[in-house]
Amino acid sequence: MSGKSTAELKVLAAKARLGAVIGTYHAKSGHPGGSLSAADMFTYLYFNEMNVNPSNPADPDRDRFVLSKGHCCPSMYAVMAMKGYFDWDELTRLRHIGAMLQGHPDMKRTPGVDMSSGSLGQGISAACGMALAAKFDNKDYRVYTVLGDGECEEGQVWEAAMFAAHNKLDNLVVIVDQNGLQIDGTVEEVCGIEPLDKKFESFGFEVAKINGHDFDEIKAALDRAKTVKGKPFAILMKTVKGKGVSFMENQVGWHGKACNDEEYAVAVKELEEKIARLEAEV
Image (cartoon, rainbow, N blue to C red; front, side, top):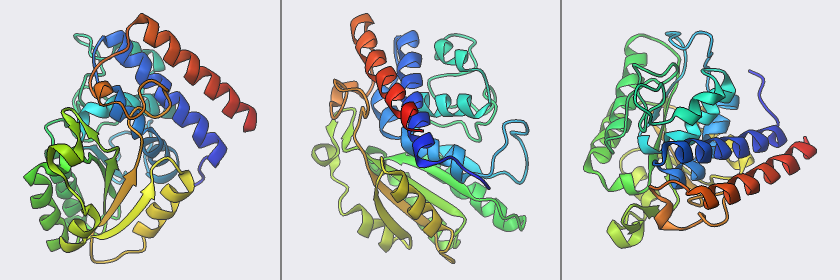
């Protein structure tokens, strides 16, 4: 499967961040911080990793993706729009009554969304079920799920982890976005989860730790995941919450609020300038 170059991926990721800012601004609500931190992984998954086809979003042989931290869907929606699942203009109707794109993924309303999610801890369980179904059906599709690091405080995450290892779900990749912040403060202060790598290993996972903003490291981890047999794979990616917008970076207050008019103008200017610089390098 041919993919995008690193230079092209950087452009797409910057556009995904812009889309998240546009969507939450027009909604006057939403979760930009964690959307921006995960934008690089979303971009790589949809453009270089997953076997998916927007022209046939229900293909039974497609790879599956579950956004377990469902509130961070704005940048995922932007990536899906660029991939061709729906028009970019849908982002301006984010969270509006009757709109295709809601504040959490909706598999009944949005083409390409494999699981409705948002209640933290449940998405990884659904992903486990999909991966087990592939085993039962002798299918070779793979299942990917993205969790938040604060979400790993949920007990259901670890029930799912036990289930995945017990059933030898080597077609499952669990990706944890470790931006270090959650709604109430830092993850360390609220309920520390470290050493997270040792926890996943003790539950039977193979683990990779990466910089979640480095496409080479993302590629290496996902390539390695495909070589592991007999156990699930976890990718722990260190990221910056609010990545790409100067006043949002590493600021817990941007977990769940939208830009006002002045902030929006600054964010759009920064991202559009970044996009222009990156496009000049392609």
